[in-house]
Length: 181
Image (cartoon, rainbow, N blue to C red; front, side, top):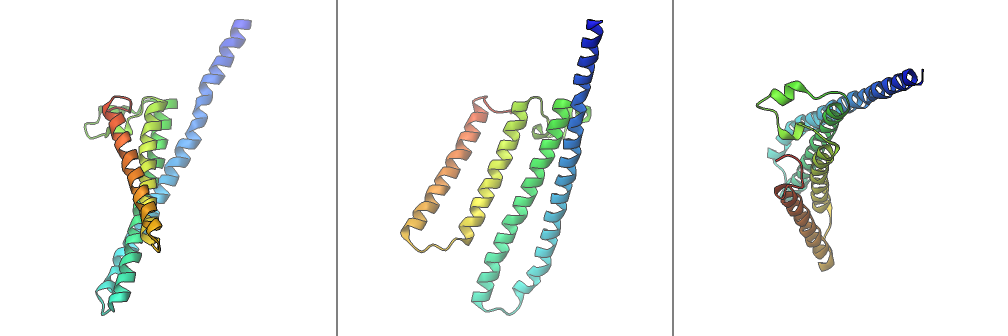
């Protein structure tokens, strides 16, 4: 009798992993939503660039260029965020539900989309999140008004730290401490 209770409990415990499907579906829907928003933003940006060729003063053109570059950075940020959500949903599915057979057999599947452990998922998400942070830093650097030499020193320090973090991330992959190569 105790053995039957144990088997029943283990069955319920094992099948409870399917609750992760809620996170998988929600992450996918959110990823599709963010992809859609970034695509609409891209379309609106291209449509409004027709005004750039209009007879504008150099000052207005410079302001429009700055606003356009900032908008492009926001679009990149949106696509990166959508990518994080997509990788997250694929990773959760592969880790808790089932390996995605089609991805394993695909010659075109990127190693980024093949998740075999929580460390794989963590490393892939960390890389994309690092890229989002780099894009955000770039966005703030464009908008910042540099008034003192110290402001430029802070900017150069931030750039150096970004370079160091990208170097260390790349180096950890080569040393075999990262995810699949």
